[in-house]
Amino acid sequence: MIKRLVLLLLLFSLAFAEFKLEGVDVVINDIQKDGSARVTEHIKIFVVGTYEQEKYKAGLGNNDLSSWAELTSLGEVKMHISSTNVDILGFSLRPQTLNRCDPFLDLCHGELILSYIAKPYFNKTTGESITGTGLFSVDNYKPRTTRYLLNPAALNFRTAQRASVTNSSAIPEISNDIIILDKNIYLTVDFPSNTVILDVSQAPENIELTTPTASVSELRWTNTILGQFVLSFEVEENLDKEVVEFFSAVPRKMKQVLESEQGMGTLAIIVILIASYAYLKSMEKKR
Image (cartoon, rainbow, N blue to C red):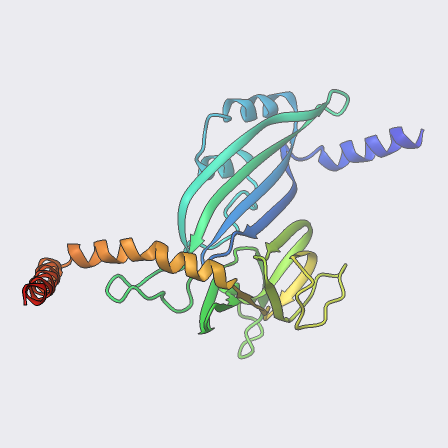
């Protein structure tokens, strides 16, 4: 009896929606020294009704995010990282087939999986990252150690509204420094190995965190309001990795030098120096 009542309540809650958001899980991982990271988003959807399920199935071959947003009329069918402040590369959208279908409720579960690389924008002349862009700003303040600071402006979750202080009747303004994560919205940051978390303005509710700490490999927020959010951490690379990277970069740097305008001149000077050295050594042996 109780089980049937629960099912009826669920049916009632979904009765007025063709597509209803089940949840969103945004995972940030594979964080690199230039501040770039891989982002994977799982957008889960309740698909109610035979007609809506057929529409969903017809769209399985469609990898255009705006088309899915139009099909479902769900505001959360979007990228939760802002392309205004982040350079998005390698974007892919993989719609999943319907599963866990309930004939009694005429309800199925659908899912859209988004995957992409989030990088800072770089100045094409200097090659330096543009301030205020990317998921993380970076500071290589000492050898083998990189400090990261999360950029809240790069996040594209629901934000709070605040009324104008000069005119109480004015239309509320969007405050991008107040991020709202509903109970079905998750933000996860997976940290690289050898991470020390330096500062978190607001830890997730299920964890007690005293900074600095190296005991946490990930943080996961949901059902919370992040106001003026701060997340700072540093990563120290192993010495052997730095040595390998140095020698691996030597051929690439030599190739860059040779392909530059001064490359052939530099190569000619090197050849002359080697030939001169060989000639002097041969003359020395003859004496």
